[in-house]
Image 1 (cartoon, rainbow, N blue to C red):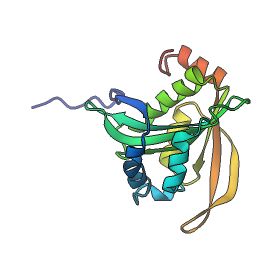
Image 2 (cartoon, one colour):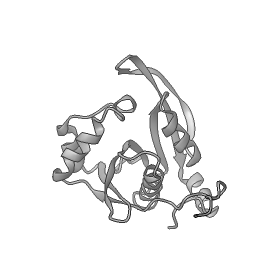
Image 3 (cartoon, rainbow, N blue to C red):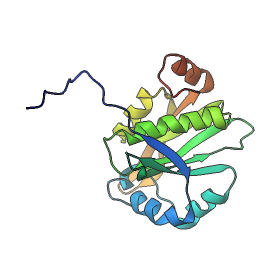
Length: 184
């Protein structure tokens, strides 16, 4: 008989890496973006929008690979990579398998890319007000609520509000000093 799991022990972080999205990845991207489990929380793009994001220098479109075999488990998009204001947006992050730690691990890698590789001063995002799981993740990863864009996006059942959140470079540095972020 195996011993019971220690409820206070946190699971090991999921293993993920980000790799640039290729045209051949777009069927996967579109399939998880249009998955009924994800649709209430995002505004899906057309294929041509994803194609443009792959090519446009101000964007970074990544496939999230995870697990021991580093299979595709999701994707994320960064916008503002060439911004003179050093304000970078996490435009979209969609993970296929929920609750396995891939979203948190991918977000940590995205923060490292934003601040260390792309020189961001501010890393921001918006999240639909009813996406409580994502909101809790962003809260726990140091993002601060800046405000709410009330009823600004048309959804299936009316208009949705967006909560705007951000993390500043100094806040990221403080979290890193506490061991809460990936090392430089």
